[in-house]
Image (cartoon, rainbow, N blue to C red; front, side):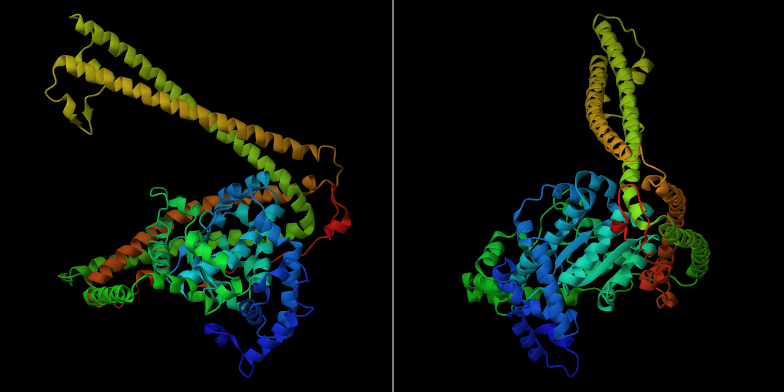
Amino acid sequence: MWGNNLKTIPQGVDGPARLEALRRRVNGPQGPKPGSAEDKISYMRSDHMLVRFLIARQWDVEKAVAMLEGHYRWLAETNMEQLLKDPFPEEVHIKRFYPQAYHGTDKSGRPLYIERPGQIDMPRLLQVTTCERILQYVYAQSELQIRRRLPACTLVKGEVVDKSLNIMDLEGLSFRIVTHTTARKVVKDVVSMLQSHYPECSGRMVIINAPKVFGIAWSFIKPQLDEKTVAKISIFGSDQREAYVKCLLDLVDAEQLPSLYGGKCRCDGKDPLSCMRAVKGPWADPEVLKCIEEHPLDKVLSPEGATLLVQAREDKAALQAASSTAEHEESNEESEERDAVPPGLPHGFQARTGALRPELAKAEQQVAAITQECREMDEVHMKTLTDWVAEFNSLMQEIGRAVIERAQGYYDSRALWQQAVQDFAYQQGDLDQVNKELEGAVKNLAVAEAAFEAFLQGKDVLSDEQWEDLAPAKADGGADAEFQDADPKLLRMIRVSRLGDTVAALQRQRDLASSELAAKREELDEARRRFEFEDSQHGSCTWNCSVKRAAPFYEKRRMHELKVDQQLTQLKKVEQRLHDARKRLVELQAESPDGRSRRSQSQWDELSLQSFEIAGGEPTQDEFMSCDEDSSEDK
């Protein structure tokens, strides 16, 4: 045992003795099944793994043994070794419709995990894979965290790294996602899996862009988490970008943090979202991976083994060069500390006094007024959410959870088909507009070419005004440089050339729009086939059909979604006004000598974890029957 693990030992408990007792138990019949894949992995009985499970069970040996036995069985039941070996062709679709990524490390050397639940498109994801395969993917990634990412970070840092920093970006989290029965099941299974089989692997979680609807999701998730896990969570609302960027930059170097969250990293150099697709971190370093392959996992995840790579690298460099580099870095750090400007007024800034007071008072009044407006709108919005929670629970009990879950595929496929129809219509409209513009441009080019040919023959069939209408010589209110001092012939050639460029650009735009329309047509056809299949499963149902019985739930959910979306749109506008007003107030307070002790921007925007809690809870299981399941499977 080592490091912070020692701090988890309860007072009066002999930690080493309990670890030894657990070690004896798992090396006996209560360990991995003899001859199994798990039995061949030494890490399964390593001190690092045993201590993780002891901490999770407050150093109670019996409870830790039971937890480990369950973990060994689970690894065998999920066929984990085969999951890690087999290719996962659905991965590209999962990353598209369930955005998540392991991207770089934080300042402590921990792997950085980013997930964007608000961008989950569960209906489309379920069209390309199954709920079971989604969970298998998450299981495999969780095991790879133990076997690859944490060891890689450990070797690079030279100290045991056994926890991660998690960023949960809730931007876009909607009512549809929160109340989607399959999404809820996946979240519940994943949370349960992480707590039961991968304890003590999360170091810190930062939840950002939390919308109002997050209260419902949090009330569903929080009861499944232990107090230690909840204590590691920080939450920032959707109007607190400055606050969460500061928090993240305190934890992660800007070069490691995606620009999407205030850092400097764009893995492809252009697209902020490219970081969600890239593989970045010590686990992508061939030298690190080779070291992991050459040494047992239990050795790497130990204080002695953690230095294997660092020691090897140090052996390659001269001691003098290493010492010189260290001194140079230390000198730079000291210099930066000396040169750093303390927070406060900029150099040479002269604070204004009397003239600021009226402006400051006006800014404070504006913030107070908008705050009140925002609070009133927020109360109305929260009432809408709490009313829906109550109605949601009531409908779940009245109609039956199993009934609603079985109808989910039908209503998902119908919604996707309807959306595909709209998308196809919009794309067709875009193509029609481009074709219309192209037709006009071709006519203009034909007129210009004919007029230019006539000009060469000594006939000027178009006036200067008509030429200007066809191909304007002015841009942003002034004549282009190529039109200045040009003779009439060259001037007309330039105009014709510009018209030709316009036609060529519109042709490319038309081709792109046609290609996108063809793709939308394929999506529409696939969505229609999927819906027709789902519909055929219920076409001859009796009154007991799950789709018919669940119709009130999905119709009311749709109406609530529309209402919530309208409220959120209005709230977002008011919150932006409030953010701007607060920012202006903070600027004025910074200029005012007697205002520097007032609230900072982060204090104005401060939110507590409790502010996201909301009434409601997990509805009870039902015992209803449906057209496609028997009662034994419903219970």
